[in-house]
Length: 417
Image 1 (spheres, one colour):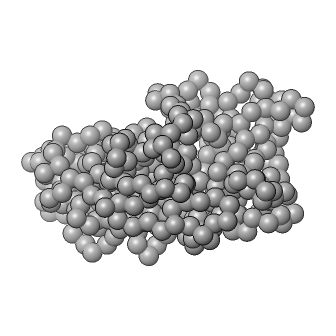
Image 2 (cartoon, helix red, strand yellow):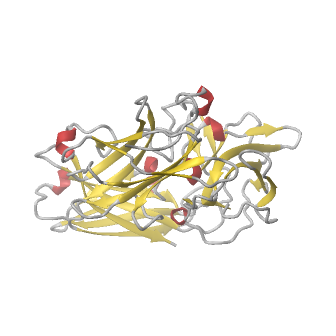
Image 3 (tube, rainbow, N blue to C red):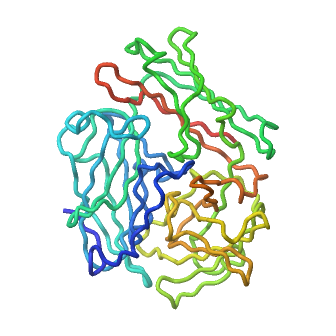
């Protein structure tokens, strides 16, 4: 039976839950199908066992495991239930039934949780290895859903992938300059897939998709495919759909919460949770010159002594950003999801944007984004001239003509310096 912790009232104050954001928002970093967690669930991670920085990918019929972990803030025990659902390439629910994509059970119970030793904020660390009794038997896109055992409420969801690892796949990234009005380079992915013999009609049944930096909401299908070479599928994104080649992040090092004169300038342990004030960020400016990749960050410390802090951000913008703008902080600490708790407000007196997030000790990538006409603008507030390492994943989907669902035959990781 699952063990966790909860506030005195399970449903509690409605203010402890993420307020809905318009479902028609475009250009989101996360999937529209993902459910944001309540405020008392933090530090959600899903990664291969033994590889905390790895993407949530399993090979079908292997002994590989994913580790799901999260923290539940509070002092009382609580139980959780886990379900998964098979999805189409476009993340809609598959037409196949659970009896087709699961070997037996349709749900599972999280069985381990450890109480923290934190002196300021009490929480339980929940950790669960997958698959266990709940075992998928087909490849494809999946959505993992975590429910409250008592109320049946869906608390949050997170995607993962199962590949058959069939065929061979190579991806190269062509970086092009002077193709955009803003001067940014673009990365154009090209893939070549040698498909297995059981694929009879590759031009109809195979497709190729690319995703940058594990922003699953930004996955793009190859706009050009050809099978001119026997046994091979070639595909690439058209230039107008290529990715930004210097997509930037800011790095937040919270391994130590003490003021360091660089990022953290104030620390107030008398509050619960402790409050931290960060040095202000400036639009189009970053004093750090380190080479960065988002996939190497997003790692909360997993010791039970780790603390949470209420981290206060501030951002200085130029006159093109009006006080009425909608600015949000997104990062690994909120799974790159836009929610009202991380919305910034403009301080007229200090002429700064201010916002905050509840964050566990660790190291994270983050950025500031604008919402304009229900569309995420994640470039206007960037520094835009530094070099950041980009990670690309290439997916080969196979529309099974007999079983009528989307299989994943191969996934390839490529890093562009």
